[in-house]
Image (cartoon, rainbow, N blue to C red; front, side, top):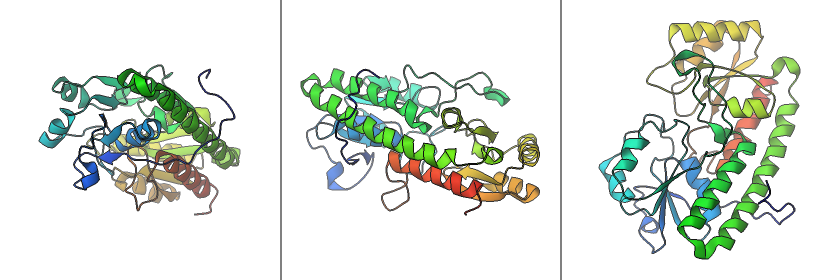
Length: 303
């Protein structure tokens, strides 16, 4: 991308993002403009671009299921103080349209101009897969859109936002190189990623993986019999050695797939939420690294 200057020194990733409702004094108004994001992954990305100039908070907390989230009265009160709200778009936040109608702050869609991967089956067939941030290559577009939104909000600090974005993209590219090394080492017969939610379409596309899943988008279900049978057939037909689920949903149906096929349960991947600070993925870059290593280790039998 032309706005990224290659070769600049990449600074260490730090996040000053907080969750709405944190009762720590640091979460109180400190005079900086408040930017809200719909979930923790976006908050971490935005905090890296904002630097010291903006206060970034996530509406949803670590571990929350983002798709069907129900905003609280406290969320609305906080949003009334915000000067900008960032949402993913692509149909991810089913609750957001009504939420944003009730608050005065403008909002920016961080997935704007992303080339979507389309869902191929079930009730969501033909709709865009909303999980575009799961590819670090696509995430560069997110960072550019975030920087553009911050420049529009606070033009006096344009140079800082652009420089922070360049540095963060540099970190994304480093992580992308690590992911490519982890995932490219998988043998051809083991390049199938089977998850509960179809959240890895962009990662699969960009890193040459075959994808299968129980359901395309998280909903109030644990896998229908048809979805479970279809996934079992895929795992058996392709001799898939390990299957996975996501941290924000029940793994019951996927454990059944593992039991019926003899595949290992490879563990829980992080997608829609970061962990808390003490967990394995307190930042977005950690999330990408953690997932890639878990996938690679489980598929080659090291876990």
